[in-house]
Length: 182
Ligand SMILES: CC(C)(COP(=O)(O)OP(=O)(O)OC[C@H]1O[C@@H](n2cnc3c(N)ncnc32)[C@H](O)[C@@H]1OP(=O)(O)O)[C@@H](O)C(=O)NCCC(=O)NCCS
Image (cartoon, rainbow, N blue to C red; front, side, top):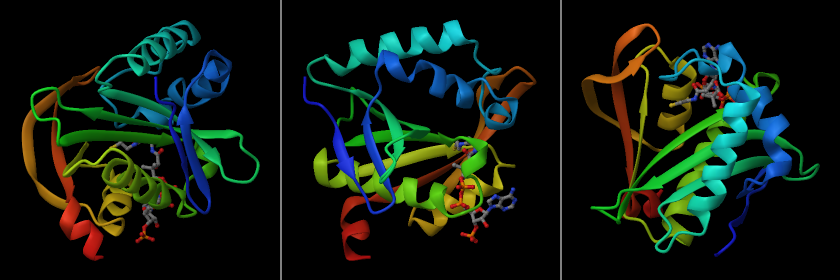
């Protein structure tokens, strides 16, 4: 297994471990974090299962799923979670997802996180295309992805089923050569 080590100026990315379950639950268990996600707040047990599956996926060859702890670059504590899923049939392309603990919101950290994920995907994984799907009403995610250089591609109708019914998604993407030129 190739461990992820990716460090930016303010943030770092690393593989999740069992020791992260409580800190991840503080994020995935919070209804303000999951309000735009297609699932209800996760229980501690569900988060533990998610970490188990993430660690198993980290050992797969080829590796398609990266569930990463987002850490403060100096303090090294876990402040968020990021997910990058390489498409099995189109391995030049991957979908990203991300969330930060609400204490971190509104200070540019989300935008930095998207930038770091793009850098990780393009430079370390050699991807050509990286995309993310957000809820149409998720303004912070929209602005974070736009500012980080991910253009809006369009709308997928009834893309996901949420606890409140079907939900459309707005897709953003970045392409490697455009991103390098920025
Ligand atoms: C999406 C998320 C990571 C953004 O994190 P963040 O640290 O608040 O992002 P930033 O501080 O970089 O803000 C991004 C932009 O949104 C704006 N913004 C942040 N919170 C806002 C709010 N509540 N209302 C309106 N705008 C807001 C910021 O001003 C900034 O805009 P700017 O670039 O024009 O200055 C965070 O809101 C989060 O974890 N949400 C829950 C999980 C989630 O929805 N993930 C996205 C799935 S696609």
